[in-house]
Amino acid sequence: MKVVIDTCVLYPTVMREMVLAVARKGHFTPLWSARILEEWARAAIKLGPEGEAQARAEIAMLRADWPRAELSPAPGVEARLWLPDPADRHVLAVAVAGSADLIMTLNAKDFPRNILAEEDLDRVDPDGYLHGLWLEHPKDVAAAAAQVLERARQLSDKDWEMRPLLKKARLPRLAKALG
Image (cartoon, rainbow, N blue to C red; front, side):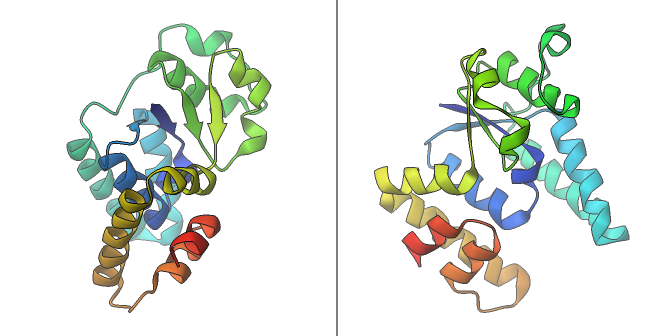
């Protein structure tokens, strides 16, 4: 299963870490583009001057960890595609170029299923997708979540618990399942 991960899933940190921890378990292959990563870096500017620098460092690590995940849109494909928000066509173009099965996004309205179906694609939200994987592979998803929880504790110096951490990361169904 190949999944293009939209910017809104890569940034925020805990959601990204949870999605990629499950990908590391071999349940899907993540894909993105340089433009998706650049959108993440630009969005991080809202955190202040250090936000963009931190995002660019995280993006460099992501590229090192997943060297084959970054794709370019197929030439000419983006021009023939239509989505309600033209700024999202590049995401669909990368999915087409990578022969992806899914686009993982929080922006359901910007990726209508009927339009994606024309390209043999579907859309998933991270919480629903991860919850579904938990139902099929509970040990793998729980182990991935435990790694994310430990990392969150280390980075924040807070004694996070699983359920509040995942709920804060906009993964409420997974939080309930694992909490």
